[in-house]
Image (tube, rainbow, N blue to C red; front, side, top):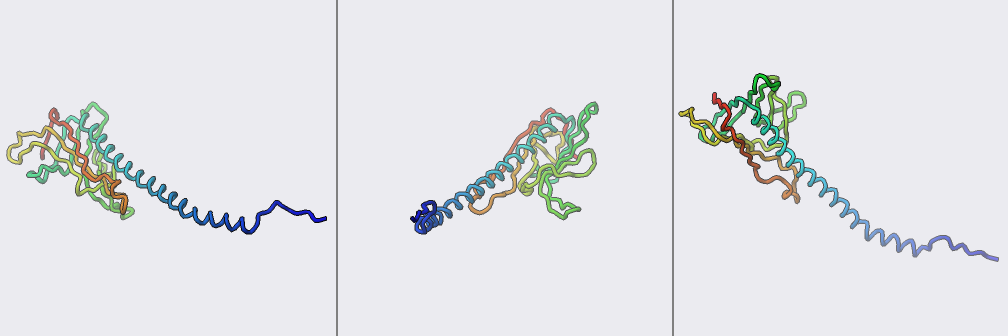
Length: 193
């Protein structure tokens, strides 16, 4: 007496299964890769926005607490500020701080860093926020005259643009315009060396 084993699959069933898998696997792969690219570009875009918010927050805090603000201006017609120095009340624990946008090559690694640099009490500049398009970032003041130094600025204008990190078909997921923030310095002591 012959007992038939009915536990296995036939060759036809296996071939049909492989054909179905072969048809759907490229679709699943495309969806998977697209999801990874979407996540990556969204993360980069959020990082750009975070950079702008971080710079704005750090400068706002220094402007609010500063007693004396010194503006180093080399381009008077455009009122562009090369460097800002904040000095605080002597009773506070905060030390003199200098801010500037610059491209600096790291001497240890040789890496070129575009960003916002901070020098605390003459200890040397350190990059606070990198991946900025330094050529499009600036500090500017509203009122100033190279001849009449009695005219003091009332507003400090920060214009900042992060680097475009998303390339190719995701160019739309970049901060494409400069973000402009105005800070009132009307009641601060302003010095123009």
